[in-house]
Image (tube, rainbow, N blue to C red):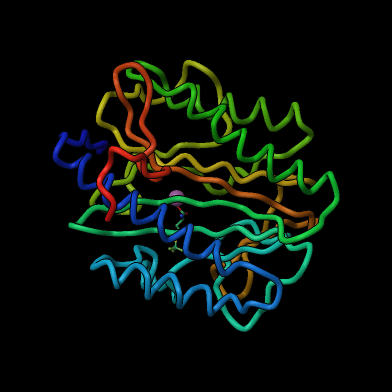
Length: 256
Ligand code: MF3
Ligand code: CO
């Protein structure tokens, strides 16, 4: 079932989105060579709980941490631990925040220090692919329009699209209907309605699209060990387009 959120619910989801944005900013401040991923996780946990909110991922289907940190060939769902970030790493940070019963979901990827042009382009183009998909969103558009745009952009830039994981609806649950694939055919799938809230999240690889699940039952990596990038925003569909709920906080919006 796909839920349509009321204006009141959208306001609450923007609160969850603002805190998600601020948590990303907080993690970013500490993201440098030498830092342990479990210390970034702790920082995010402390920041979120200090704001009377909950990390959505903690204990979700048994997930053992507050955020996901996926490095280099890791695509998504990397579990923070003793590993230290090092120069040249491609680091994806994925954060979920729940406040007043509503969730937000957002991911970013950073290149730490110096990296090849290829790797920098992977990260830049994955972020641009997210916006290619988002720009298809408006009332009356189809879910397939989003994936088709992401896939086209990825292939034009020599990147492959991970198909095993998809975006999703967001609301009182972190994962709701509908699925939002990062591939597909224009004009197909569910029709978008104003008030639907979607997490759009392309995962693009520099090499082939194939991935495997690690023995920890969470971390997903590329088969060919090529680096992968991931960007995600939670957005609400509007009559003419969409609004990003996990984006920057503007001057005329209340700070938290
Ligand atoms: N943002 C992730 C996703 O949508 C959620 C991580 S699932 C968790 O797939 F279990 F790690 F929390
Ligand atoms: Co998500």
